[in-house]
Amino acid sequence: MPIAPNVVGMREVRVSRVIDASPVVVSRWLEPPTIVEAEGSFTVETIDEHADTTIVVASGPGMQLPLRFEERDDSVYYTQEGEQGPFSHMETWIDVEDATDGTRVTFRSSVSLAAPLPFGDRIAAWKRKGELTRALETLEAELG
Image (tube, rainbow, N blue to C red; front, side, top):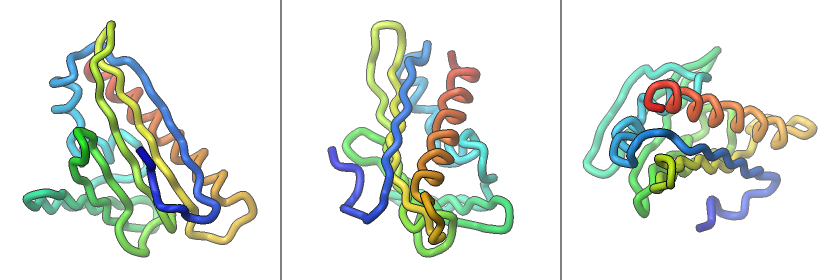
């Protein structure tokens, strides 16, 4: 499953872990505001729920950004909306699948930094991988 259109300089990151909980319990935990808070970089300001999407406006040091969440092919999918935020492109898929010792949760994300810095996309990928790892650690601490 492709993550994103071909964006120049974009980097992809992936983190995965088996959580000692059922897929149903893990899926219940994977609510948009919970995910944003678990990543640890932003706090949730507002939540706007629609029939097929949820828009979470998150804030961090000196910025606010809207994140658009939706269900796609039994996965949680979200992307940074518009021009606000640290990335020129960011999208993330969260896959949940049954595993022998619980539930395998995999975060896949593609990012491209909005600022023209040398190695900027590598820095963005490193930062994003840290956020996704924190989210998995929080998920494991709360459910595992």
